[in-house]
Length: 172
View 1 (cartoon, rainbow, N blue to C red):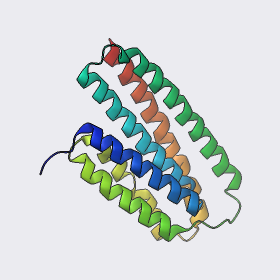
View 2: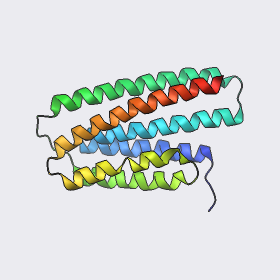
View 3: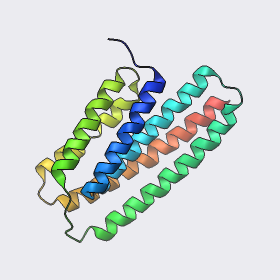
């Protein structure tokens, strides 16, 4: 099987981010948005690999600044999702679970295929299991969505710190 190049995998990941975000917006799912943010982190990791591999001398400093700004945005997004999840956890608004399960399953399968080219996506594709299992097994979809959103936001914090650390170490 021919491996996809890093630029192709990055383009596919941005398409998946768009699909996951649009589906999450349609389904009113906070966990879907959080899952899309995890894909964004993987795309940033691949961008750093691409820049370092091609050794664009002038882009190293811009890369670090860009990654730090993007991580700040992701952390703000995570705080917002946690806050929104905690605020609406008592309400009973509907989450369209069938659609979000299908979109997440589709995204996960594509990420698994992309992980044959680059192992960065394997963890994110595995992290789709809580969404699929949670919405399939539990009847309180709203509570499940909020708990999964908080869980993914914690993972976003951890992966963001790792991304910044790796970017700083790559510069040295």
